[in-house]
Image (cartoon, rainbow, N blue to C red; front, side):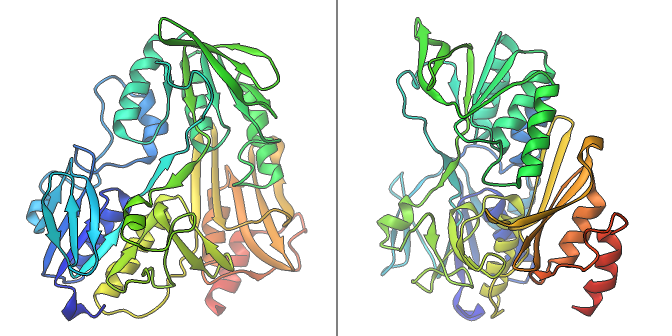
Length: 416
């Protein structure tokens, strides 16, 4: 939509993506009405610390806000916290709110994020069974950790393992169950999975693979443990369920927009309605690094897509193609990923995993497509430079013990 037409911009969702859209619009010179609708009652905040630093902090500590308390008013952004958008009238270009009010728009950006996938087993409703997505969730978990005697984590994904590391650091016995054959199976290669598993086990975490929960057991309405799918009984008075997330697409569905594991958008992050965009966790978008339509859950993706949409509303005309990159801090283990791997990719390991400092290069049909690093931040930054414009031919000396990603990036990146 040309700049002159998008006088009134409404953004639904006040997480990383939504706030960044508003920020980038104002920074780029947009002077029209700008409304940011968030369903949580607080100022927008940084989400990554919720599963790590925030849980380890003293009671009363709060995550850093995404912007200061005065930022929104100072920049003419109408921030509406504790406000739920329930409908979109595309013909009239109105967003309906739960309190009955309506907001008119020329451009609408859906930054609705994602929700935790529920574990549908008996006892899942017991007190003491938690999920972690919002600040309210994190506050409840932090209070529960202070009184817990045994912790059970269902799901060995990023959030589950980050939380497990925090609980174990507090001296609590921690068991992690995952139905898969390795931790982080959807996100990283086998060498990284093996290192992560060994590190958590060395820290005293009981990591059990090929096992999930058949039912929770409790007394007086509170969880007291679980029975695994293999019949094993696990004692726990605090359970975190982290088995993945689903995009929040209900508002888009009610508006008649296409959804398929996310709100379907084109390369410019527009839906089939040219006045409506989707960004962040909720958006299913074509990506040149993936070669297909994907949905990504990361702060980098959320903020970069937000900047892209803001630039489009200000007149830019190009497709989104930023390199995906991710990170996860799990106690002493720090994993960084640049690019997108697939199952079946070949791998070459740089460095010695036994030292806790190594990288895994993921190769597909002779191209370097992703680099996963543990304890080697220089490799991660070099990989981001190398892969910024897409996969590159695998360096011929990649298997040489003296190979350096940093030197390779310095030599190749300028030529791209």
